Image 1 (cartoon, helix red, strand yellow):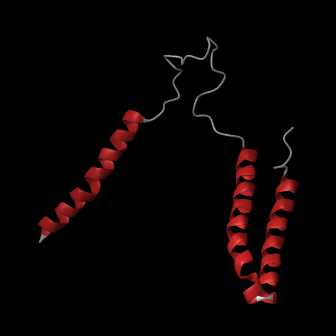
Image 2 (cartoon, helix red, strand yellow):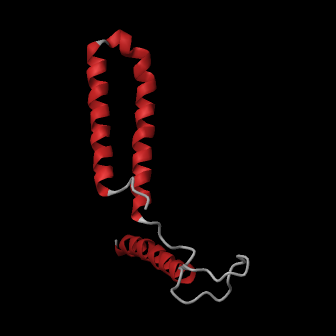
Image 3 (cartoon, one colour):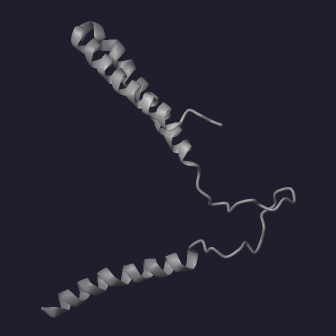
Length: 114
């Protein structure tokens, strides 16, 4: 009866310790670089794994919003004549939501590159 509990405990704990050990062995450490990459002799100004500025994430979200907009507009253009006024109203509501997102991004400075 207790053998099943022990086996399940071992099956749950061993992978966790293995993954932790693998992480400790392969994680990026804050130690200085021992070997500099070849970059025309220039010393790197920042670490290779540094994060992007937050404005790039906002620009990416804007791109995805308009990419999804086009994904919805192509099929809509095919069936708008069949569906009628309802399709036109729904598309304008969708475009209004995107317009609100653009105004928000503009207010947050996502479109300002200076």
